Image (tube, rainbow, N blue to C red; front, top):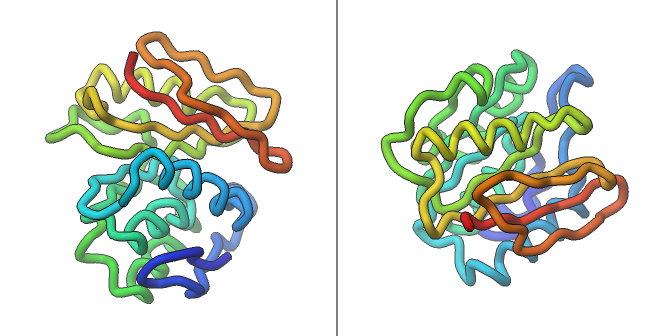
Length: 180
């Protein structure tokens, strides 16, 4: 895995030692960030949340492209170790807030986020459940953009959100949502 674009373009990222997490493939990340860039224009100054973060590849990509800050939430010990090593190697720890624990255990937000990236385990519906909960806890603002990565045949339907677009990439489906 490598950072695709921005300040750390080409830098290698560590993946967790175990197979409890499924890192997003470079091709899928490239497609996702192309979709996001066409809607956001720039990542400069954005506040991002990388939920079900794993190695942190999605949030790190956003930081590399100019995001001001990224909150990373992950509960797997090996993934957290890889995430922290990746942030340290890039000198990005000062722009990161790492939360060790379940996304579903996050409390009320101090502010809404501009971009929320959900990469939950496939086939669980956990991304949709977490988005619904975080919405009620103030994590989503009226202009927030949300990405949920699922298996290609999984449906993403969450009350209060409308699908902006979706795209299949290999075995994955990327769905971009906005508050309705």
